[in-house]
Image 1 (cartoon, rainbow, N blue to C red):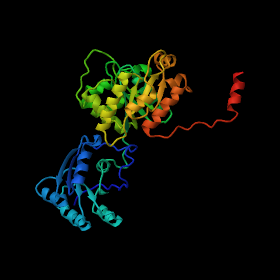
Image 2 (cartoon, rainbow, N blue to C red):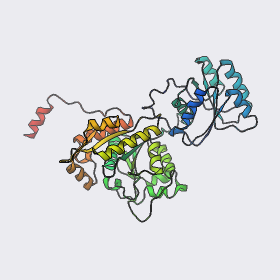
Image 3 (cartoon, rainbow, N blue to C red):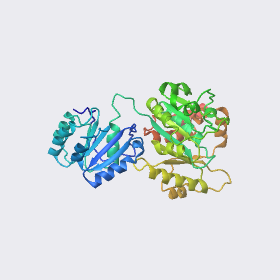
Image 4 (cartoon, rainbow, N blue to C red):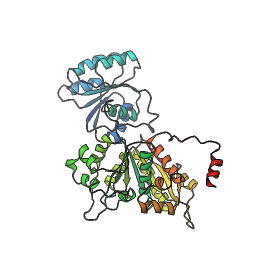
Length: 420
């Protein structure tokens, strides 16, 4: 008999895809046997989703009969995806399939009968999931990925990638302050991974000078595991850790597209939130890091080059992640004296999306924080930019607003009395 992992069925058609967090599937083989062209197209589209990037997907037509015939002489994959039309065909077909299926194979059935009695019977037979047709690509992604996210396991960490539309726009400063807000105000364990190995500033911004960091991991891929990565982390606060860049030029930092994959996978298993400080460059690994993130924040200043780059990045990443929330962007350093700027409404019209916040040009407070190795919230907790970083943190993590103490109507009067 086939050994399956039970998975509770989810209702809905994926309308909440933008807010839903689905953990990526591991390296598994998936074979789909479809009866309709529409389902085959949905499965094909699902195979292009970033969360199934490591899975090897093969699609065939013929449904249950084709699957039974195929596995008479061939070993079964990790996951079989079956489309079937009728009620009786499902049960009789599964009984035949169980005689040719290897132990440990998981089966997902796509059917058109919406009946709880049938579902219970399928569960009794060991089916992993039953999805009602017609299916959308996200339904397929959710079902396959859900097979490997057992309730007892730790929640897979959310990866947030922050990148600048142009060099020098302050993307690293925004990334570090947002990570600080996630850790301090939302009390979510967070790690900042500085991916600019040659010129990264996370160590300076957090006033840390660790002897080890992300370079030790990326240049020793065979050693990467949870214990090894934990030793490389530098603790900044109770909830915030840093995977620092060496910021030295004694070697050249050329990487393949998958160089950081094992590091990110390991961090996901131990940290609820991972903030990637992605340098402004367009390489195989940087694009892969952005496309593979759960959420993306693009930081731009209000000029023409930033507008062009933001538009290009926004459209490219949105197209590469059709089942994810579109990238977010913010405008930084707005209001520089005597500098001609593109106003926010024109910027938003070109991008076809509103910026999440517009951060004003505040050279004194940002300069003081940078030189002191502090965050804005540390030197000016009530400053308006601190509230903006918290707002970004809430949007990127899907958390509600942080609770604030209720103010009394006598507050302003008492404040004036204290000042006197």
